[in-house]
Image (cartoon, rainbow, N blue to C red; front, side):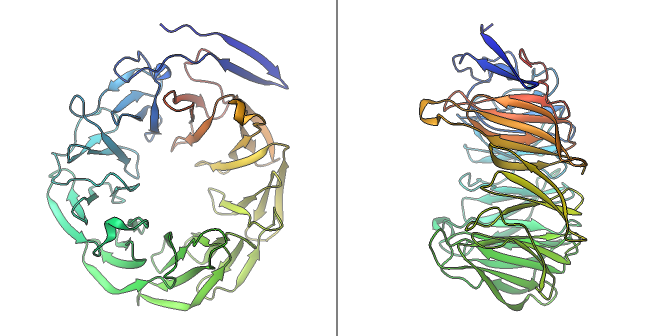
Length: 439
């Protein structure tokens, strides 16, 4: 076993754990998940009983989320390398192998649930594959420049959708999105064209071309009821204005004129789709009515120049906003009135919501000596009734990602410098480490 030295520092009820850096261990060498080093990506399954891990070298394995022992390491054939994607139910994993194959595996057992799929996955974009909402089909972006759609159980190819010529050279990724019921499919290609398909992957309606040719990043959102979609772009700092266009998915025609915002814009639908949360690069983050696009609510500003970041609560009844002032504000979307505020001296980096609307997890960066490789992050579970911290943990290593399990029971930190990246798993409610040597 690898020896470690820990120093516990009690800080106002918070315990800091300073860990000596061990040498890197590969998936085959590590006796448990906590010893693993060189972790590139990781995700939970539906009930947090399993964790899929992709290493820097491309090897992929499944680990037990409670005992942290290996379940299927490596996943697939020995020495296989690749990238993975998880289905909406977090019950299956598709692995695109560097050798030019793809296969779907059960997330709990690690056993294959599909034959090898006849696809040569393009592993450059993320995501390069996407599951249908029912988890019965998967679309794989092939190196031949097409989306290839397979029935998972049989491995049968059910559709092949070519992308426009030159798509492989574009910086704009191609994406596929679904209405929750799976009856409508939208594909945004690198030209900024949104195309509509039915559940059998048959093209429907006319192509919807985003109205900003100067954009280098284009995104799309679709309402849960399938009536509307929005396309939007980010032309970059000090570039031309970004644009947002609302589309009627029944007619595949634009609704009104594009909305312009400084330094780009993004959007997401709220509820069933009668309101749109609009976040520009600069200016005022706001809620618009759909389809009129009239102003419904201007959200609080957290900086004189940059727009506030915004995230709806899990029940869509409120919206969090935050920015450079290190303050989190909660606004009631029905009344438009403030519903709570939490302030800190540390910089608020991100907000994570779970399946329950009673809590949120805040990630703070309080690092003051980054050039000396000293890092200081905090993860706080915030009780939303009183907007007060109810649990906390301190991370004294570079923090890449903080991941909450789909059921909200576990939280994972992905930390470490290059080649020494690791993951640690915590109880999401108490933020105490699961099977850890430290608190």
